[in-house]
Length: 200
Image (cartoon, rainbow, N blue to C red; front, top):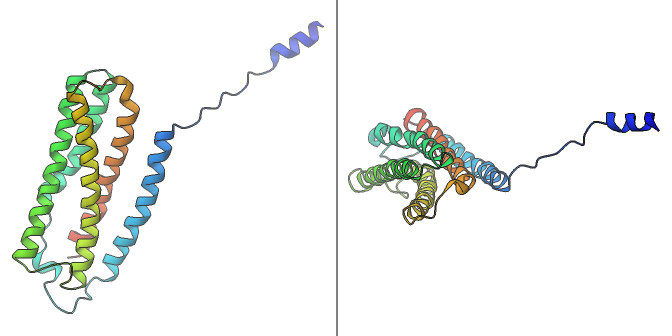
Protein backbone atom coordinates (compact mmCIF):
# COMPACT_ATOMS: atom_id res chain seq x y z
CA UNK A 1 0.00 0.00 0.00
CA UNK A 2 2.82 2.33 0.95
CA UNK A 3 4.65 1.39 -2.25
CA UNK A 4 1.56 2.22 -4.30
CA UNK A 5 1.22 5.58 -2.56
CA UNK A 6 4.89 6.29 -3.24
CA UNK A 7 4.44 5.41 -6.93
CA UNK A 8 1.45 7.70 -7.19
CA UNK A 9 3.26 10.60 -5.54
CA UNK A 10 6.25 10.06 -7.84
CA UNK A 11 4.07 10.43 -10.93
CA UNK A 12 4.96 13.71 -12.66
CA UNK A 13 2.15 16.26 -12.85
CA UNK A 14 0.17 16.44 -16.07
CA UNK A 15 1.58 18.87 -18.64
CA UNK A 16 -0.57 21.96 -18.82
CA UNK A 17 -0.76 22.87 -22.50
CA UNK A 18 -1.33 26.53 -23.25
CA UNK A 19 -2.98 27.26 -26.57
CA UNK A 20 -2.01 30.40 -28.51
CA UNK A 21 -4.46 33.27 -28.29
CA UNK A 22 -7.03 33.48 -31.04
CA UNK A 23 -6.23 37.09 -31.87
CA UNK A 24 -2.56 36.36 -32.41
CA UNK A 25 -3.32 33.28 -34.53
CA UNK A 26 -5.76 35.30 -36.61
CA UNK A 27 -3.38 38.19 -37.25
CA UNK A 28 -0.54 35.80 -38.12
CA UNK A 29 -2.80 34.07 -40.65
CA UNK A 30 -3.73 37.45 -42.12
CA UNK A 31 -0.08 38.53 -42.30
CA UNK A 32 0.95 35.31 -44.06
CA UNK A 33 -1.88 35.71 -46.58
CA UNK A 34 -1.11 39.36 -47.23
CA UNK A 35 2.61 38.60 -47.53
CA UNK A 36 1.89 36.16 -50.36
CA UNK A 37 -0.34 38.78 -51.98
CA UNK A 38 2.33 41.48 -51.78
CA UNK A 39 4.94 39.06 -53.12
CA UNK A 40 2.96 38.70 -56.34
CA UNK A 41 2.92 42.48 -56.86
CA UNK A 42 6.62 42.85 -56.04
CA UNK A 43 7.57 40.08 -58.49
CA UNK A 44 5.35 41.65 -61.16
CA UNK A 45 7.00 45.05 -60.65
CA UNK A 46 10.49 43.56 -60.95
CA UNK A 47 9.50 41.42 -63.94
CA UNK A 48 8.25 44.41 -65.93
CA UNK A 49 11.20 46.68 -65.08
CA UNK A 50 12.59 48.31 -68.21
CA UNK A 51 9.86 46.89 -70.46
CA UNK A 52 7.92 50.12 -70.91
CA UNK A 53 8.06 51.27 -74.54
CA UNK A 54 7.23 54.89 -73.75
CA UNK A 55 8.05 57.29 -70.92
CA UNK A 56 8.08 58.56 -68.35
CA UNK A 57 10.50 56.04 -66.85
CA UNK A 58 11.29 55.50 -63.15
CA UNK A 59 14.64 57.33 -63.25
CA UNK A 60 12.91 60.36 -64.77
CA UNK A 61 10.15 60.89 -62.21
CA UNK A 62 10.84 58.97 -58.99
CA UNK A 63 12.75 60.32 -56.01
CA UNK A 64 13.04 58.37 -52.73
CA UNK A 65 10.46 59.58 -50.16
CA UNK A 66 12.94 59.72 -47.29
CA UNK A 67 10.82 61.81 -44.89
CA UNK A 68 7.75 59.63 -45.45
CA UNK A 69 9.81 56.51 -44.81
CA UNK A 70 11.29 57.88 -41.59
CA UNK A 71 7.84 58.83 -40.33
CA UNK A 72 6.30 55.44 -41.11
CA UNK A 73 9.14 53.43 -39.60
CA UNK A 74 9.16 55.68 -36.53
CA UNK A 75 5.49 54.86 -36.00
CA UNK A 76 6.50 51.27 -35.24
CA UNK A 77 8.45 52.60 -32.25
CA UNK A 78 5.67 54.86 -31.01
CA UNK A 79 3.06 52.09 -31.18
CA UNK A 80 5.31 49.86 -29.04
CA UNK A 81 5.60 52.68 -26.50
CA UNK A 82 1.82 53.05 -26.54
CA UNK A 83 1.27 49.35 -25.82
CA UNK A 84 3.79 49.48 -22.95
CA UNK A 85 1.97 52.45 -21.48
CA UNK A 86 -1.36 50.62 -21.70
CA UNK A 87 0.13 47.56 -19.96
CA UNK A 88 1.19 49.89 -17.14
CA UNK A 89 -2.36 51.30 -17.10
CA UNK A 90 -1.04 54.75 -18.00
CA UNK A 91 -3.93 55.79 -20.21
CA UNK A 92 -2.68 59.34 -20.73
CA UNK A 93 0.72 58.16 -22.00
CA UNK A 94 -1.01 55.54 -24.14
CA UNK A 95 -3.24 58.19 -25.71
CA UNK A 96 -0.25 60.43 -26.46
CA UNK A 97 1.86 57.71 -28.10
CA UNK A 98 -1.16 56.32 -29.93
CA UNK A 99 -1.93 59.77 -31.34
CA UNK A 100 1.71 60.23 -32.41
CA UNK A 101 1.50 56.88 -34.22
CA UNK A 102 -1.63 58.04 -36.02
CA UNK A 103 -0.02 61.39 -36.94
CA UNK A 104 3.10 59.71 -38.35
CA UNK A 105 0.99 57.30 -40.42
CA UNK A 106 -1.16 60.17 -41.67
CA UNK A 107 1.94 62.10 -42.71
CA UNK A 108 3.10 59.10 -44.71
CA UNK A 109 -0.26 58.78 -46.44
CA UNK A 110 -0.37 62.52 -47.17
CA UNK A 111 3.14 62.36 -48.61
CA UNK A 112 2.10 59.49 -50.86
CA UNK A 113 -0.91 61.46 -52.06
CA UNK A 114 1.27 64.49 -52.85
CA UNK A 115 3.71 62.29 -54.75
CA UNK A 116 0.89 60.81 -56.81
CA UNK A 117 -0.48 64.29 -57.52
CA UNK A 118 2.91 65.36 -58.88
CA UNK A 119 3.33 62.18 -60.93
CA UNK A 120 -0.13 62.44 -62.47
CA UNK A 121 -0.49 66.18 -63.11
CA UNK A 122 3.14 67.24 -63.58
CA UNK A 123 4.87 64.18 -65.01
CA UNK A 124 1.90 62.66 -66.83
CA UNK A 125 2.26 59.22 -65.25
CA UNK A 126 -1.04 57.41 -64.74
CA UNK A 127 -1.91 53.76 -64.29
CA UNK A 128 -2.59 53.55 -68.05
CA UNK A 129 0.49 55.43 -69.29
CA UNK A 130 2.81 52.42 -69.56
CA UNK A 131 3.83 49.21 -67.77
CA UNK A 132 5.79 51.21 -65.22
CA UNK A 133 2.72 53.27 -64.34
CA UNK A 134 0.54 50.18 -64.05
CA UNK A 135 2.91 48.26 -61.77
CA UNK A 136 3.92 51.32 -59.75
CA UNK A 137 0.40 52.41 -58.83
CA UNK A 138 -0.64 48.79 -58.22
CA UNK A 139 2.18 48.05 -55.79
CA UNK A 140 2.40 51.40 -54.00
CA UNK A 141 -1.39 51.73 -54.06
CA UNK A 142 -1.83 48.32 -52.45
CA UNK A 143 0.47 49.37 -49.64
CA UNK A 144 -1.31 52.73 -49.28
CA UNK A 145 -4.60 50.84 -48.96
CA UNK A 146 -3.20 48.81 -46.06
CA UNK A 147 -1.89 51.98 -44.41
CA UNK A 148 -5.37 53.52 -44.75
CA UNK A 149 -7.00 50.49 -43.13
CA UNK A 150 -4.46 50.59 -40.31
CA UNK A 151 -5.02 54.30 -39.76
CA UNK A 152 -8.79 53.85 -39.56
CA UNK A 153 -8.35 51.15 -36.90
CA UNK A 154 -5.86 53.30 -34.98
CA UNK A 155 -8.28 56.24 -35.18
CA UNK A 156 -11.09 54.05 -33.81
CA UNK A 157 -8.95 53.06 -30.82
CA UNK A 158 -8.00 56.72 -30.33
CA UNK A 159 -11.66 57.75 -30.27
CA UNK A 160 -12.48 54.98 -27.77
CA UNK A 161 -9.56 56.16 -25.63
CA UNK A 162 -10.78 59.76 -25.66
CA UNK A 163 -14.24 58.53 -24.64
CA UNK A 164 -12.77 56.69 -21.64
CA UNK A 165 -13.29 53.12 -22.80
CA UNK A 166 -9.64 52.00 -22.92
CA UNK A 167 -7.83 50.30 -20.02
CA UNK A 168 -5.27 47.55 -19.41
CA UNK A 169 -7.86 44.87 -20.23
CA UNK A 170 -7.60 45.87 -23.90
CA UNK A 171 -3.85 45.24 -24.16
CA UNK A 172 -4.23 42.06 -26.18
CA UNK A 173 -6.52 43.67 -28.77
CA UNK A 174 -4.31 46.69 -29.26
CA UNK A 175 -1.27 44.40 -29.38
CA UNK A 176 -2.87 42.46 -32.24
CA UNK A 177 -3.46 45.75 -34.07
CA UNK A 178 0.17 46.72 -33.50
CA UNK A 179 1.27 43.48 -35.20
CA UNK A 180 -0.68 44.54 -38.29
CA UNK A 181 0.96 47.98 -38.18
CA UNK A 182 4.43 46.45 -37.88
CA UNK A 183 3.59 44.32 -40.93
CA UNK A 184 2.60 47.42 -42.90
CA UNK A 185 5.90 49.06 -41.95
CA UNK A 186 7.94 45.97 -42.86
CA UNK A 187 6.22 45.74 -46.24
CA UNK A 188 7.09 49.37 -46.93
CA UNK A 189 10.79 48.57 -46.52
CA UNK A 190 10.44 45.97 -49.29
CA UNK A 191 8.35 48.29 -51.47
CA UNK A 192 10.82 51.14 -50.95
CA UNK A 193 13.80 49.00 -51.94
CA UNK A 194 11.94 47.54 -54.93
CA UNK A 195 10.56 50.79 -56.35
CA UNK A 196 13.01 53.50 -55.31
CA UNK A 197 16.33 51.60 -55.17
CA UNK A 198 16.26 48.54 -57.43
CA UNK A 199 13.62 49.95 -59.77
CA UNK A 200 15.47 53.17 -60.55
